[in-house]
Amino acid sequence: MRPREIAVVSGKGGTGKTTVTAMLARALSERCVICDADVDAPDLWILLKPVVQREDLFVGGHKAQVNTPPCDGCGLCSRHCRFKAITMTPSGAHVDPTACEGCGVCSILCPKGAVELLRTKQGHVFESQTSFGPMFHAKLNPGGENSGRLVQILRERARKSAGELRKEWILLDGPPGIACPAISALTGASLGLIITEPSKSGLHDLLRLLEVTRQLRVPSGVVINRWDLSQEGSNRIRQACEDTGTPVLAEIPFQEEVVRDLSMGNIPSSIPQELVDQILQGIQRITQGE
Image (tube, rainbow, N blue to C red; front, side, top):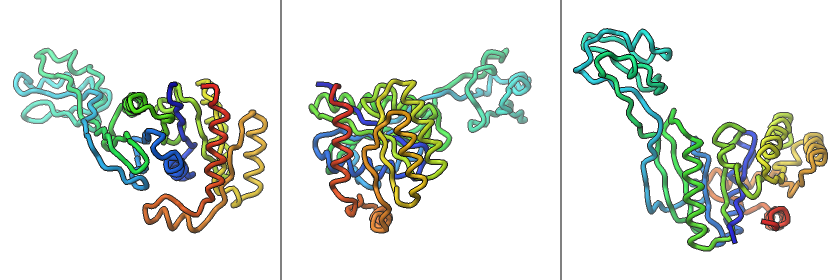
């Protein structure tokens, strides 16, 4: 049977997405492969404390490089660079790699063939072991490109591992928002588990994510975190879920003990196990046809 892949997502950071993922990893101990797909700001490792077993470079995107010689300082590349990434110096053209978008215009126009496009190191990919099972995660360099592709690589490795180890679940901590990395994490998943909070922005982000999962044809379920901070906000989220036919799998209350546990890098222990079991039961119901 194909492992069921649960993508835990949220409209923005700080809603409790990674916390819920860590609690589910603990509950599914040894039955799942874990994947942290939040490659721009990964922090699941803080709670799961993985031991790295393998590290690979992630290479993607292109940057221009000027070779001197044959560059003779004609300035043609600099005049036509729309990103203002090339400046002229006494020794020839100089490329600012942080501004270069790798479009290739400079390499096409250079009459001396002095400009070449090189693939660049964008980050690192890790295969690790945790107390709850294998974990695949990555770290994109600041300003690194191709985060959607990096998410895809992590998912491919997690799927391969789950198949080889005959794990029932792939638990994926997805990127926040609805941009390319989040879409890469949700596409083809068995379920999008959306973590939200009782605020106006939480409701707005929830509705955007529900539209994304609908477009991608990915079933979804909702967990309302810190629901008791705003009864009015929670009621609005419940109503939105009812209007869209989306089940609310659990409502987690605010607890100061959770904040203390997280500040110490620990998975919260004060959240009742019944709530975690309730989420898992809801996931089972939605994905049982997989």
